[in-house]
Image (cartoon, rainbow, N blue to C red; front, side, top):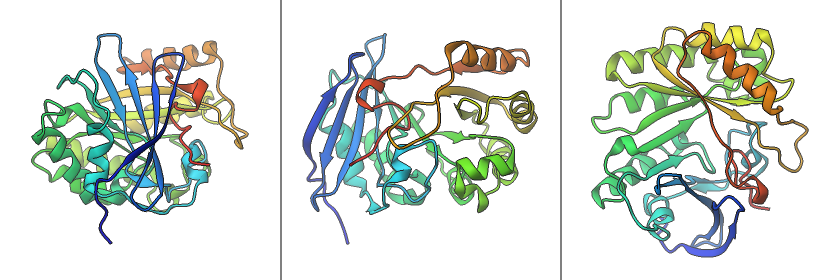
Length: 279
């Protein structure tokens, strides 16, 4: 079945920090969420969705609580940005970090990237980031693309048994195999890889977790985004304190790793990373 780009803004919710959470109604009455995040330099990040629900069921993500319904079409993905672009600047960034696993909707995601560049929504493919929980065939396919977005991998935990509890799809795509594919990706493309580490209190913040993570990624030229967990209804996971986040980041800095603590946007309206859910 094909889906057109008849998206309608069903509702929008403003955060105290200036972020806006958009609820889009699709032509078949399903719903997805997109978040517009203003940056200090006057630019915007568009955090967009690629699926209704998500099949991956990651424990740190509210979307994982939802039933997976379907993939979004290329036009539906493109329209999320096209309908709300504000003071358009081609240096804005598009983040495939909303609802869904991009590599389980690979063709539509890549086709939408072409549209973003072709229609001057963004300056280049490097203004687009695709975030995956480690779908190995998708990483391999992306390495063969002449024009490709930046690649981000959600680590969650470098210890396989712990990662499986947090990211169940890791049973199919073990973290060591994911890293091997990342090494091959980098050797082929020369691109830096972004590693996202959702930091969760008493789950992946121990000394053992830090050592395992450093050992896992040490052969890869990368940027690390430490993302303090954003709590959501129905989850028993807890956000670490600011001091606990600083301690974790400091440990990575000691190894001269290119590490950033990512700020949380929109958490007061459940628009933060990992908080997107249609109820």
